[in-house]
Image: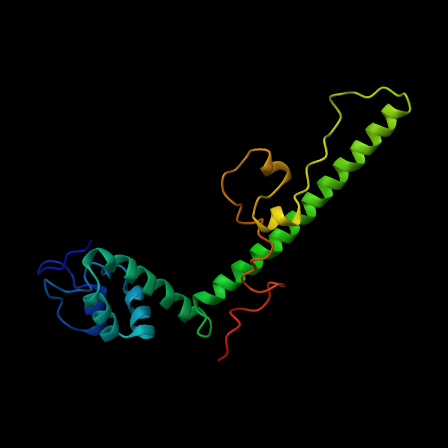
Amino acid sequence: MYSSGSYNSPCAACKFLRRKCMAGCIFAPYFPPEEPQKFANVHKIFGASNVTKLLNELLPHQREDAVNSLAYEAEARVRDPVYGCVGAISYLQRQVHRLQKELDAANADLIRRGYDTYNTNNSNSSSGGMVDPLNTMQVPIQPSTAQRQQGLGGGFYQSFGIPYPLPWSNDHHHVNGPEGEGGGGGNM
């Protein structure tokens, strides 16, 4: 934490507001003089008076997290005035959805190749040909719809007996709707 005193330079907030930084300045621990843009963004978006009220209402151990959240949102609002950090969250959710589709396609391809290898090896053994036991591949167990809805996963992850539902296996809980498009769905 930064301590404001008579020998130190004023905090970024007091310097920005052009006032004397007193010993009990509520901004001093969270807006050091080395980070003037941090307070400038927070002041531009939320206003110094509102931030002062907010910090005075919080317990001292909660203030740092609140200031970090305000600074993050303020910087996001400066970069994207319409969506702020919600725009970044929506972008990341769409990226996760896209990557999940790629992962599902890769898993389906692996299962298909494993099934093809399994069928090839079984057809060789039934026709009297020799099968190398080290090259045989077992087909992964496909989870039922009920298992997928319960988040039980299947195949590779099911064999390890994970005691909790896998976050990426719940097909019925899409944040952005069934197609993963849009952001929020609210009316403005």
